[in-house]
Length: 495
Image (cartoon, rainbow, N blue to C red; front, side, top):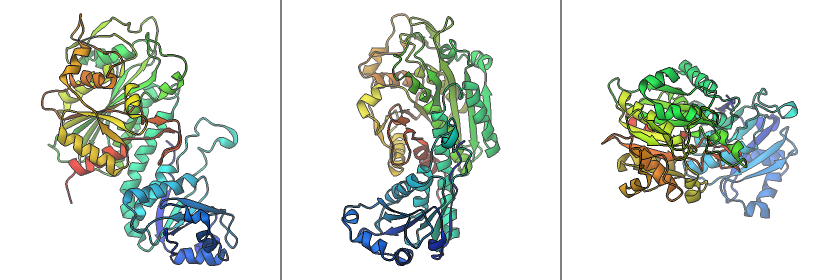
């Protein structure tokens, strides 16, 4: 796993401004007021900070923006980063400001003089989230994965208090990084077996982890899941991760993730252009894994079970054909119209298993399920489908608090008509119109009466082609922060 940048608070020592190497960051308000560390940096640089504040460059700067001065005179640092930050900035604004600093961090130490920042732990978390790169498969000078990341030290008058507040935030950041690593991995490395092995390693964190193999899945009747992977040499698996941090008799929240480690489309083969991006089709499982890691690291006082269905969708002589009919674990029969609508076949069996075995307090599934959701919402929001207003509103509130875009989409029985089958109970796709909604309606058939449920279609947000506020190009880790916040707000005791 990519090493999380070491981030910690230490007691304020303005003398370090002169001797610190790497990068040094100071904080100024939009009206140009300097705190004690900023004034010392200004003296050392013979007024360079004040000259910056009087420039047009500063006049155009907004709160949260960083202006860098390279090789400042009078200092050993390679750069003096001037962070413009309003005193009354919200937690989200402070975290984004931290991410702006984190984007500049590389393999060098970073010293941040954060004596006047009201929400300094959020600043530190933002830095940890953005100080990420995935270089495991690069060589030569670009092979940075074995080089320790430079430590980030934030100077503050209350370091013990700040470090205590930062610890659970860094736990979530580590979960986000795990999700990114999994989604960024190529499919020849992250096979179904390798994925399962990485999840099994989290027993060291206190999770209970089980790996169900194909023989066990067949005995359980998970034929729709098995039908997706039967054309691949990689064995299909279901991994169950339990975190038991709540009351012994409290029903757990169940998180279910689609884990298609590579999706060719099967016999309904995808176009060649862009198929290389289908390494991210296990994004839902990646988010579940990262969330379970975060919950274990921060010792969440709740019961949560994470289940992921791991398969590879390949064309071969053994592959499922369009027109085949398979029976789900629930007992419903499914006509396979398009083998590229495979994620819902994985999820429906795992969803039913989760409910049958754990009788959860609620179920949330995540999947890079449809291209249709990207047409509707782009890359700014995940699609949210739910049968329960209370659970859905709690999730939307958590997502908003964490700055992760989510938008509620409709469900309705009228859409069921589009996925009726002539020869089976249901078919796995209703065609292009309302494609993300009919996919959700398919999954709704496998949710028991009165079971609170959310389906998150994350196809547009799991991996993107440009930098986001918290992540470089590629995997974003979207969902880990929101789900951890949801567990904290709704399923952990208050106080």
